[in-house]
Amino acid sequence: MFSLALAFSFTLWKDAAGIAGNILAFGLFVSPIPTFRRIIRNRSTEQFSALPYIYALLNCLLSAWYGTPLVSSDNILVTTVNSVGAIFQLTYLGLFITHAEKGKKVRMFGLMMAVFCLFGIVVAGSLQISDHDIRRIVIGFLSSASLISMFASPLFIINLVIRTRSVEFMPFYLSLSTFLMSAAFFLYGIFNFDPFIYVPNGIGTVLGVVQLSLYFYIKNTTRADFREPLIVSYI
Image 1 (tube, rainbow, N blue to C red):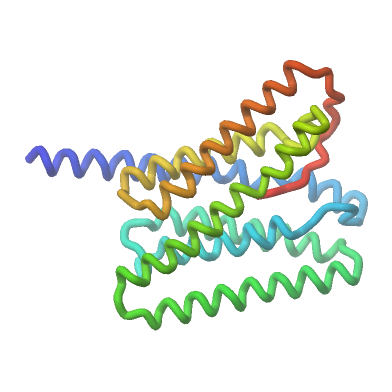
Image 2: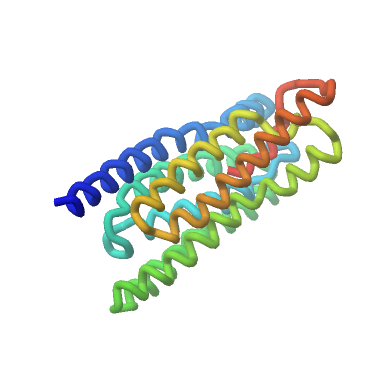
């Protein structure tokens, strides 16, 4: 009886953390909107890069595939959040390609197609692995590596903030959303006993704490010019 109650409790907390992660991820997905308002207003991508959205699209696709019953069990909330994330990334990439110069337009479209080809190869290849546990491990490592790379990408922005002593390039709500979503899925992975979820999101949580701590430290110790952030998006 005790073991059943404990299992039910873990399931309840896992689902609560997963639902919270899905809700909090929305803040992360919409964070580049100011950037694209500027792009649409100026009819130019200026110095902004679409590579973060290319990386994010690949990560969302791999993580969504990992969460399906064909790869891992009881991880459908991972699939839902990353499916929504993939739609957002496709929308951003579509807007970027529409307003980019011809050379950049062709390059970004080619990279986007390469992401879909790579994802197709991963899906087709993983389905050839008959052992379900091995399939889960292979896709788990791929999705974890992709997620860790995405969480680590703000490190160059942290370096920029330290050098310039300005938080202009590190929007607060983007850092907060990253931290909250990572923390929610870290708990989700813990309650689901899934290292392919709690390890990368644990790293994301730590990096989120670092970003927020740096933000408040710089803001409180400098008299920076707080203009509208020139977002170098890393979602």
